[in-house]
Amino acid sequence: MTVLDGLEVFWKYVDKAMQRKPRNRLLLGWMSSTTHTPFLINPKWKDDNFKDYIEGETSWDTVNGYLNAIRWTDDKVKEIILGFRERGLENETLFVMYPPLLALLRCIVKETMASRSLDNGPRPSKIPTTKLTERHS
Image (cartoon, rainbow, N blue to C red; front, side, top):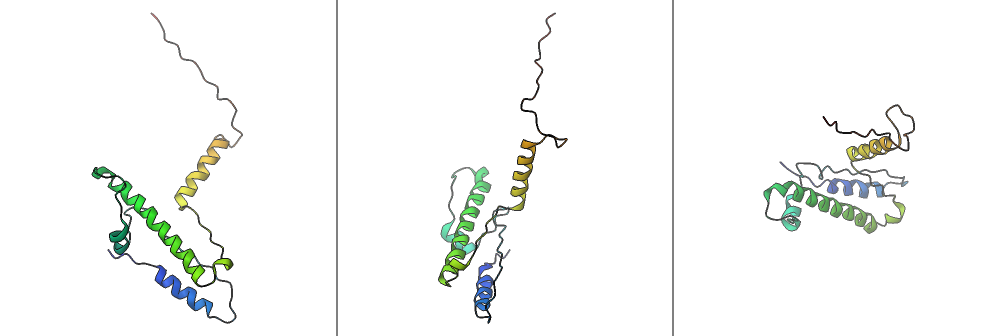
């Protein structure tokens, strides 16, 4: 499977857009699914940077893959910000970063469930409980 570095195309587009007259606002997005299995990381980056955070046990390979995918993503975000800085666009750019949609939905559901009961009414401050006692014969 081939892993592409989409930033090459991204920067070509940014450079071409900067040459337009009149120079209009530009709205761009970059999304990566690298932090989702199967953790597809550019082989060159992997050869140079991959680190075993948890050594020894093969059952932790998924965790190592995930942690390296996060590190790869951090490097790409840094590369994007530095790329805008090199082009003199950093102070004209609004960087918006957000978590993956599924994680965002989990947070929303968790917040909603914490503040509401199933019938959409406010949750009682104390949940009534019943003490169970053992029956002695």
